[in-house]
Length: 103
Image 1: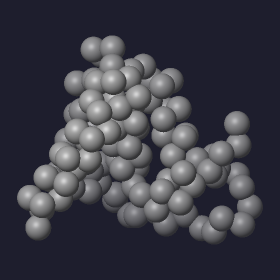
Image 2 (image 1 turned 180 degrees about the vertical axis):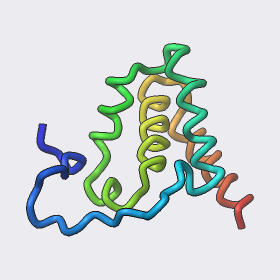
Image 3 (image 1 turned 90 degrees about the horizontal axis):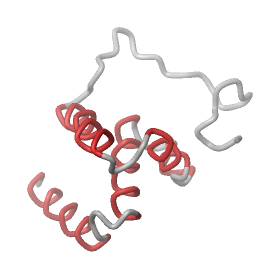
Image 4 (image 1 turned 30 degrees about the vertical axis):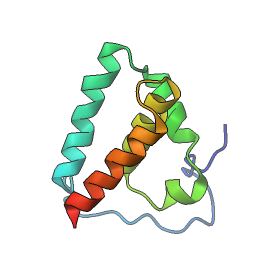
């Protein structure tokens, strides 16, 4: 597979921006997303291959312009909707609620 997520070893993509003493999490929300994985995967909502494949299916622009844990969150959203755990409408409604709470 040679998708947008396979940038290692490609020429012409520029230098990597390596953060000195980079923390594991840049914000509380990233810790929460990390924790969500352990609330979903071990309980059969998806397996590791499905999780990775959902990230690999992200559009190139979104993949390149979002963070590592944004990729995880997108994978959760994709898989939970595809498997009928939540509807796209429920997801959109909750995202709007969270956005409103943030303002």
